[in-house]
Amino acid sequence: MKPGSFVAYPFATISLILACSAESRPFDSILASFNILSEQSPLRDYIMGTPSEQVSTGVIISDVIGKTQNIAIFSGLTRDIDTVSSRLDNAAQNATVLAPDNSVMRNLKRKPWEDPEDYDTLGANAYQGSSGEDRARANLERFVQAHIVAESPWEEGKKVKTLSGNQIWWETKDGQKMIQPANVKVTSIAEKVSNGEIWVLAGTLT
Ligand SMILES: *[C@@H]1O[C@H](CO)[C@@H](O)[C@H](O)[C@H]1NC(C)=O
Image 1 (cartoon, rainbow, N blue to C red):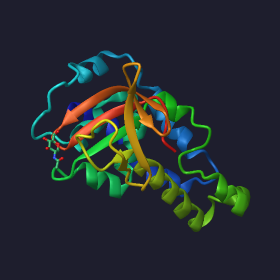
Image 2: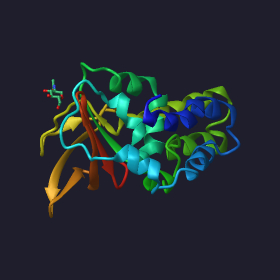
Image 3: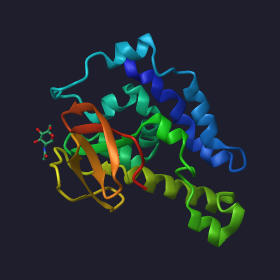
Image 4: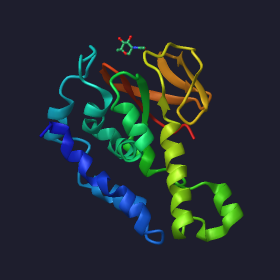
């Protein structure tokens, strides 16, 4: 078993949770499973070990995205969205993953599968029933895709489209990488592997 693979487990159930519990609070139960993994643990230190400045050859994003604990919530969502997980698992297609950290994901004003317009047009039951589940799933997919850029290396100032079709770029302000136009800080680069990089964000891009 790879050291990071244990963290993948809680997310295998997200589709099931999404599908089964329109009335309970599915996201909260995912978050609950994360509260048991503390931010500072010997295991985390072991897994995080040496921050990777050099590119690990042969290793791809899907191999490593589960091992960075401070983005575990977002990385779990990437594994659950087929269009994204297949992309990150493709050694021939580079990507830059812009992963909001766990505290950002915990403090979202609305769940990543909620869209205020759905509530406006459909009311409080917007995510109930099978069409509601489809709607939630499509919104979740768009949320995750809005945090994946289909190229790496990604040069400063270069305008690129995310997998959801939004145009973004990054620039350096006071020595700090900022994703624009959302003006979201990149707090670290968690991984550099053969098909791309994983950047950790202090906010979301939607
Ligand atoms: C993909 O990423 C690797 C590692 O950074 C890089 O060497 C390679 O040139 C990239 N390929 C493309 C098509 O951008």
